[in-house]
Length: 159
Image (cartoon, rainbow, N blue to C red; front, side, top):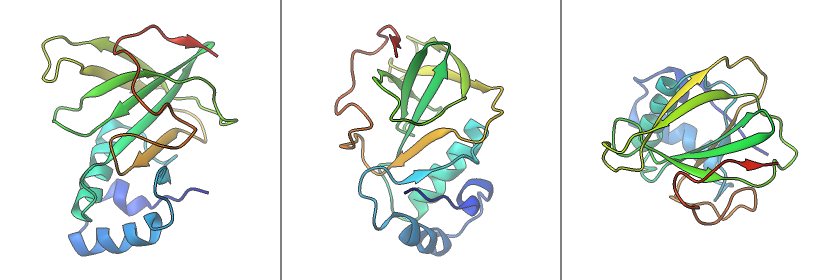
């Protein structure tokens, strides 16, 4: 089961105490995959969420984005550090029965710091469910995701 709370997404002015109270209720029973957030419609909203989680003392937040395009699934991890947003590209095998309609484009940016950064453009988000899983550590031990990143820039894997 997953939870969400719109104030962490919509309000960049959430106080530290408010964020802490919300996060305590949302996160305490979920050590790996924390929140499913179908409300996020932009990277700005994702940044607001991460900033508010940090206010609550959650400092190692990652956002995992599973994006279905055609017959392939692309898997990104946003560590939230540094700004501008940096992404790592992961192959993800299997969909765990979850539907996904997040459409996107990306490009490799070798000039970025770190050089593994992607520019990710989210577009045409017109669905009831996006796979945005919020984790409080740099990796996930959930079987839903690979335990370690695969080679950066590897080809997308067919389902």
